[in-house]
Length: 385
Figure 1 (cartoon, rainbow, N blue to C red):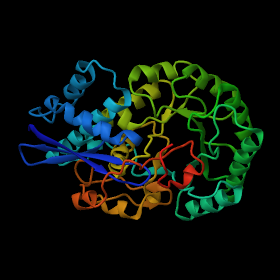
Figure 2: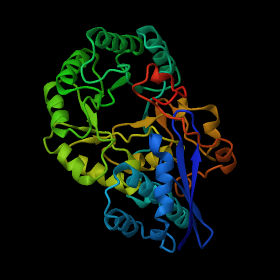
Figure 3: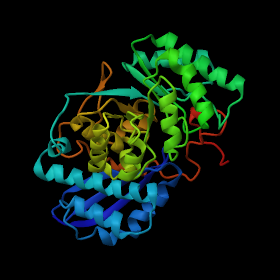
């Protein structure tokens, strides 16, 4: 079965333009994928179209050789831009293969390890940066059925926050913990804001609230600093979403200090690429938490990964807190029941893309999430900084 066309679609979600792809074949089957990359979605779309010659005419079943050719033969690094382009096509190819064989993708990668996937909520705190507002928003998250959530309480903090601002962040975490109780897992996101000294101090201040993990307290490329923080605080440190190759994960995990690996499928080669990283993490007794702050096709890909990965911890889930029309983008979406997401059972990814909804929400160059703008958590469309 040969690839005949690769189409890209940019969708104007107000806080992040999404990039979807549709791979078509000479036997009439098609597959969908996603390559969303924050403020660079249109750049990834260009990368895909620029390298169509690597895809057209290729056997859609030969995914490994296709990805090898794209990663190795294009000698330019490209990092997340190149990997998001590759991942979008890889996911779409797996969708086609699953449809051709009449199987969900997880059955082609070892089969089910679980019947449902525990999810943690993100994107839920579109509220003022006060302890009371965060606590009220967290209460609603629990009422929706989630048993875990993640949030960034640090405002626009960078490197070394002012003491009053740091105190406010700790007060927010305390208020959320008091509201949701001890049985709801809390992950505290830092978006690589701090230097090592500040990260260690803040990590120690978080210890009384028993975070499930402290995410990216320092820059994701500073493996030594990440491991230093992990060794110095009694809180698990999670990281990995920004990494783009296996060697980076080996270097990160070699000190046996990081055990929550927040791998992003779109940055590491898609579905099979993520399973490979999960195996590396498993060799270091680590767990994976697939990063999924993208669109709903990435959610489908993550569910396929989470279903068949033995060392899964939890699955990130933004979709509940996206724009209302997002639920109409796909022909199927998972329901949340008692803190767990359904696993798709239809062949391939388990859903198709509604192109009419895609066309109704065009790309907008100002859409994006600016993490160092005041009140960024509201996910409004801001002026460019």
